[in-house]
Length: 145
Image (tube, rainbow, N blue to C red; front, side, top):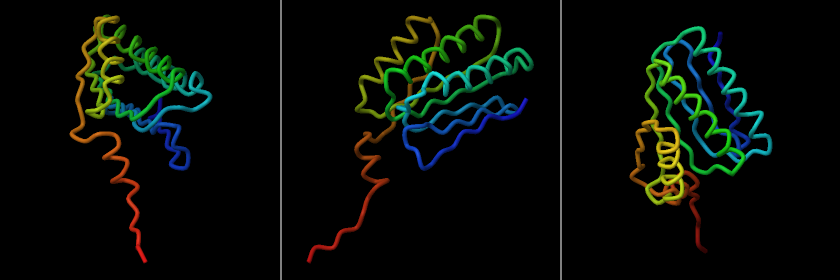
C-alpha cells in the first residue's frame, strides 16, 4: 500500500490530498467543487478501507476546506461515516476540521455530522476570514497614474 497524494495546483476546484500510510496522517485541503466528486472521494474511501484492514493504526485526519459543493459534501460525509465506523470498531483516530471564522454554514455542517454519527471532531476556527485569506493570497500591487 502506498501513500495517496493528489495535487493539482492548476485546478482550484480539486482539493490537495495527502494520505500518509506510514504516519497515518491524512490531510484534505483547499476547495472542493469538481464535477466528478463521487469518483474523487471514492479513491479516498478505497485507500482508507485498505488502510483500516491492513494496518489498524492510529490515524489523524485534518480537513482544511474553504468551500465545497453539495456533491463534495456527500463525499466528505461518507468519509466521516467511515472514520466513525473505524473508531467504533476500536480504531484510534483524531479528526480536526478547520474552518474560517466567518463560515457559519461549514461550522453547522460539521456540528451536524458530529451529532448524526455521534463522532467527536475537533472544530478549529482560523483567526482570519475567508475573504481576508483570499485577499492576502491574491494581493496585487497596483500603480495609480
